[in-house]
Amino acid sequence: MRLARIAPPPGHECPGYAGTEKPAQAGSWEIGVFRAGFSRLLVWDVARAFMPGRTGRAILVFLLLAAPALAQPPVTVTLTPASPTVGDRVQATLTLRVPTAGLAADPRFPVWGKTWGEVEVESGGKPVKISEQGGTAVWEQRITLAAFKTGSVPLPPVAVAIPYTTGTVQARTPAGLALAVRSVIPPGEKDPALKPPAAPRSLSLGRLFWWTLAALAAACLAAAGLLWLQRRGVKGAPGARPALPPFEELAAELDRLRGESSMPTLHTGVSFAVRRYLGRRLPFPAVESTTSDIQRQLLSRRMPGPLVRQTVELLRACDLVKFARQEVGETQGRERAEAARRVAGEWESHLAPKEPEALEAAG
Image 1 (tube, helix red, strand yellow):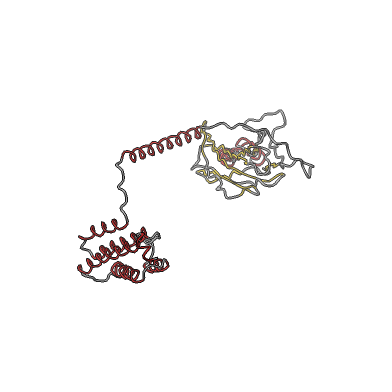
Image 2 (image 1 turned 30 degrees about the horizontal axis):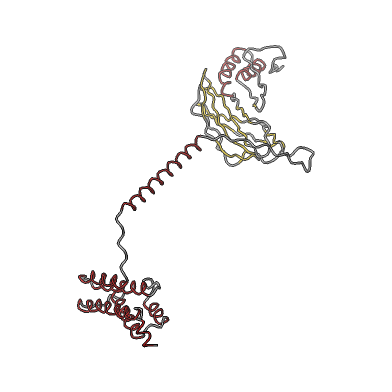
């Protein structure tokens, strides 16, 4: 018994037979598959050889109807660019053409990790159906690859699951698919010479530059307008009241505190007024200094001991009320305010310039 040949001779066409290969294009690798026509031809030859008669024909009809389910649709992979150099980004496009008849769901493309073989996968897009016509749908998935090894870097076959109502078919990418990665160093040169520097290139100014320039110019104009209005307001304002002399300022502050009923507020105001007076009369930062620092300052300037002692005792009494919340009566608080006025008067007498007659008498 002789088995019929499964492919027609060159130049001879057989009904229902389609070629198994397509001519490859630049940068494209395609998979050769057994299509439905070839499957029918194979079943016909086997049935004629082993199953003659009506029974064989009945079985033949059944097998011919089931033959399309045995065919796997082609999966093509297009690599752009076809010959990258080390580190170049390569876009790989997986294209699947599948009959829609009997299709139970959308095809399931690979879920990409970090690598495809020895090639790094930098990003992987979602599968998209780009067309459907004549009972055939075309699906695509695009991923971005990068190879850091020269030579032929293989891309192992990966499967695309196609769910039919009768079962799931696995369509795979071509075996032998690879990236031809070129080196950036010229072949045969161990120490290649550097290329001469390229001429300067002018860069065009985009819309973002002009929008940024306009925003900065508007901000500068707004700031200049606000500064002009501020200076105009200062010039138009009435003249500031000249500062009072130290003792007059102290007396005015004590007069203002005369109606204060809160003892902590009263003692805080008295302490601040005395410190400000000392700081202006004896140039040193008395307001920012502690009571002990003020005492050291006054003694270092060889001030009279009794006057220094009175001043420090008054400040310490105010500190007890400010910080320790010592309970004092209103009468005692008024007495301390008057004591501050009296101590400041003694400082004025001591610091006042001496008359020439008094200096001669003392001399």
